[in-house]
Image (cartoon, rainbow, N blue to C red; front, side, top):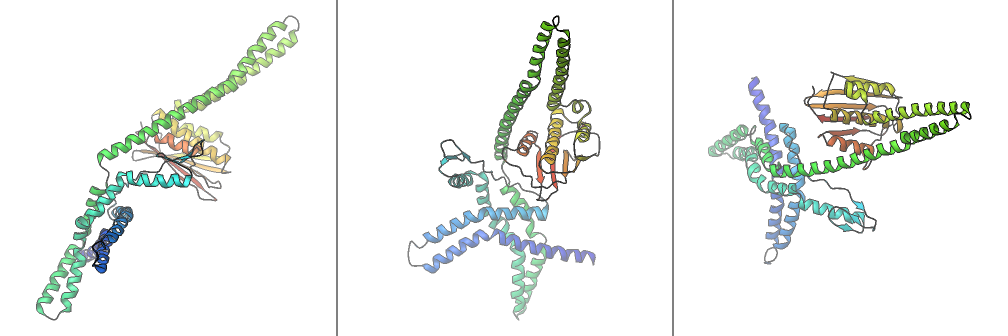
Length: 418
């Protein structure tokens, strides 16, 4: 009885999924069927087919992407297989000094025209668009025909049992058997067909990966140049200026040593204080480049040291002691520093929680504060820079920050711990 109940449940679920798959696969053919019906209804005029043909073509182009999105969603929900959409994302639209807007393809007088032109060019030039169109052409045959078997069997059974003859009843029984027997399996072609037709080809994946790495290299180069300029500025405005003043004080002290020993002693005391301040600034600068505790003891202890120096009440938890590659540790440490600083300066938080864990092959860092929320990744902002820094290691940054808080930031970077 248990096996029979399981079979009935599987048949019911499969019948529902087959009906859904049939409807989705036949949306575009339904548009063309309606166009043919409209052409036949007009009739007589030899050019009457043009308008229905254009209408059906536009309908196909409009429906292709929504249909494929629905199919990807169904496959993920039914089988757990995620088929990446692979749609190319629009880049920023920049206003030039001439007043025109550049969208990566052409110049426009207004930002609206620039974005409109960008969307159109991106849509036509995106290989995913043509994959979607290919799927909508092949899906009615590859998916729709098989998915139609259970509904067709039910319809045949209803018609057969509606007739009083024995042959019709036998036909109805056969149709019912076909419907029940095929229902658990008729929808299963959706996954393989969608995976084969909607997944990007290896060449396209490689092309997108090369473009992504090129952009990451450009971002890394810009970030490195900015970091070098910051170090030069800090040295020039801080320690270097103090050391120059220290040298002048020593020269003056040497000249007045015989004439006014007390003044010379006072200037030497000031020079000693200036040397101590310069040493402190150099240590702060070195700590900003690579904190000694991070180099010597690793990410977890460096974050705990950061928590002790923070004005917030910070709780740090780590499920194990991790030692990662130094570049990854530095990226995560400065990312945590950026998030904690934002919590202090912008979110007006009082407490924060930092969690560091190894999940499968990813190092995952969660930073949560009780601030006012509303954090967003803005172009040119600190969070955007942090996202670019993590992207150099194939890492990700996800921000959840509703108005009123709390703010949760999750950084994940693929790595192998030692």
